[in-house]
Image (cartoon, rainbow, N blue to C red; front, side, top):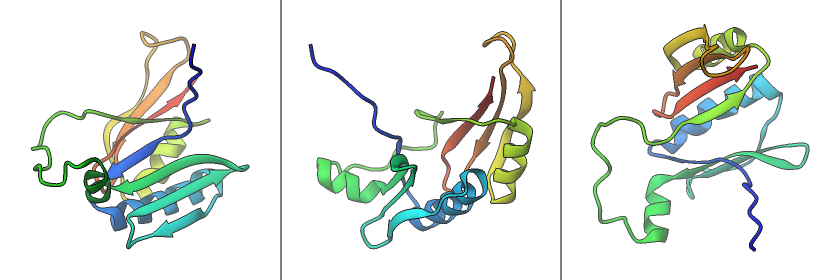
Length: 137
């Protein structure tokens, strides 16, 4: 049997500069960390905490070239196909902080007992369009 270990989330972003700016400010505010590397020309950035990857950004165009889909159009506006879920200690505070960095609140903080005991969530959209769920439980 092959072992599998999820390493870290990698967001494929359309607007690298906007995404890198947002996540630099947001992760500095939420976790007190700075980017390990930001390479705008390559469309690549990463953040670590205690030597472990937290988040990686990669420009969609660069990935499309690697996997050979660069001649295909970007998806039309549609429902989201992925979401980054972050566990935080205080959903309301994290929502305020991220919206202060330009994220748009799409679902206000609310208790979700039907999803799990003591679960509270909020949903935001980052300036580059990534859907983020904040959870506390």
